[in-house]
Image 1 (cartoon, one colour):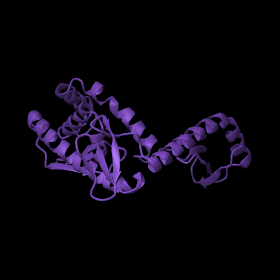
Image 2 (image 1 turned 90 degrees about the vertical axis):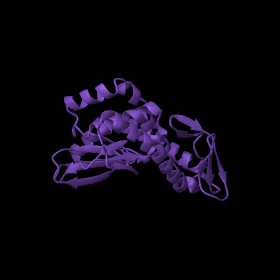
Image 3 (image 1 turned 135 degrees about the vertical axis):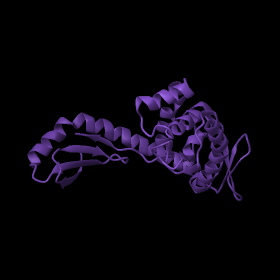
Length: 232
């Protein structure tokens, strides 16, 4: 049986968690017997082994990317080559990314700042265009560091986008823009909201499909917070 960390609390159920580093965490009720816990671990042995191996592989992949850098850097669905330069800010010249520093890991803060700037350049005019087309005025847009949402909408009319959205293909970016603008009229995901989205962009579901693959890539390469696996 693999080593694990046992956390007892006032919960009513027994659950397992595999951390992003592949460690096993057992969460149990305060008075649950060790015998029951051990039996549960034996029952879930296959699940534990499978998810620990997957988590460790993802962790190794993320560490390698941070150390050596990815093969290419995405921008609007296209991977571009990159190279390091000793001095100067991060830049994109239309054909490649130029990153400051002597190692890829050193360049990450500057690279994020560059992506934020590129996101503003892309999303401001696109949002203004769709805002006018749909007759849904906004207060403005903000570029955030959100990791689990591509976009969000505030009740006061501000549209928030994760800078990571600019990595996605143009049609997926447009789909998120339309999605958030429609929330200005319907602040939920009711049938009326989805009717608005389909009316504005009939190909929405097809257009935004690449976002799932992009999320997986970002997690695999360490761009996003790695996810834990859980079982109850």
